[in-house]
Amino acid sequence: MGILKELFSQIGEMIDGLLSKITDNPIIKKLIVVVGLFFIFIIIIALLSSCSHKRYSYEAFEKQMVVMAKKKYQDSDSLPKDDKGVLEVSLQTFVDSGYIKDVQSIIQNNSACTGKVKIINNYGNYLYIPYLDCGDKYTTKTLYDSIVSEDNLTVNGNGLYHVGDEYIFKGDSLNNYVILNGIKYVILKVNSDGTLRVLDTTRRTMVKWDDRFNVDKNTNYGINNYIYNGINSRIKDYVEDLYNNNDIINNSMKPYYATTEVCMGKRSVNDNIFDLSIECSQTADKYPFTLISASEYYLATLDNNCKSIDDNSCNNYNYLSQIGSTWTITADKDTSYKVWKLNNGVYLSNASNPSYVKVVTTLNGELAIESGDGSSEKPYIIKTFENGKRNTAKK
Image (cartoon, rainbow, N blue to C red):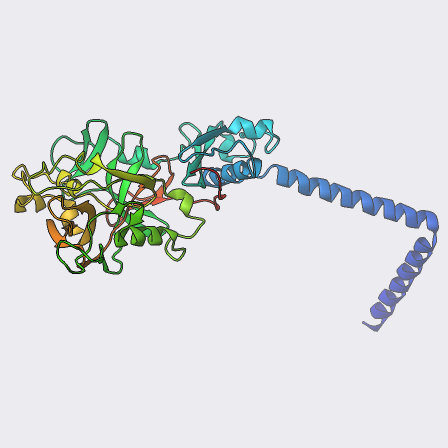
């Protein structure tokens, strides 16, 4: 063992001496540097080549489409200036602009895909909606296509009914639930333009519809005008405060809420309960949040015995009878201080009485679905992407 140890020691000293002589030679030293730089260059090229061949999953590429659209149109005059204005950007635009070489080389399975990004001005906030079509391999699943399907459409029993140019949910056991930003909504109907009217199911603080002094009653019974001479009712102030409350909906999520028609016409006891045009005979400026109309409650029932406002049968086969108490936007035409309220039926209540508020809003039907079947247990989950950019132009 001692002899081997001495032999290895001598070999080590010889190698050290040889390396020392080599490195003392300036020509050899330069050669070592050149060879080293060459290998470093080869490594860098390999790394760049690896990065350039990165492949995205379909879902990851949807997000990348949004990233590219926001980068391309940041501070651009091309963005739509008016509320609900739309700009469509094709995938080919990103190729032509040099953001990607082509789609097939960077997406999984070498898929040949087409697609687009829709940029929508929602009350001054820009919503970016990606749509990817890779044929049989993958297609973005939208909220509208998930709802307006053969499985949901019906002419009998619980389900989605095609009424005129709209689709209305009727019955008491329905797949009409959706979650956005952690908030659970029940879908009332699909509008003629493909957007969805939805009701927030969250139970929040009880508030008064209005508590101003009423000259007809000579007391603070409230005044049942949603807005009058540019002055808001208490309930309208509350609805607007909810929209502007960043603890409920932060600025990054505001692009997902589209403006909705605010129908504030008053209703008499003897009016046709199914006639929504009564409420919409008087409107306020469109806003992202509003309240449910009294007639919308009756449109949800399947009971043919529901014919007037005081028929208890209207509560049968009606999913809205299960949502609990909430103010409607609909005031009483025959008084100056009463308002219609939902609570397992539709009742008149003094505006100064407290009740819960469940707001109504509008969602774009082209929003992408992450999962779910629309049931209460498995609601549709809406995909959300990066923050939208605020637009200070005309609303």
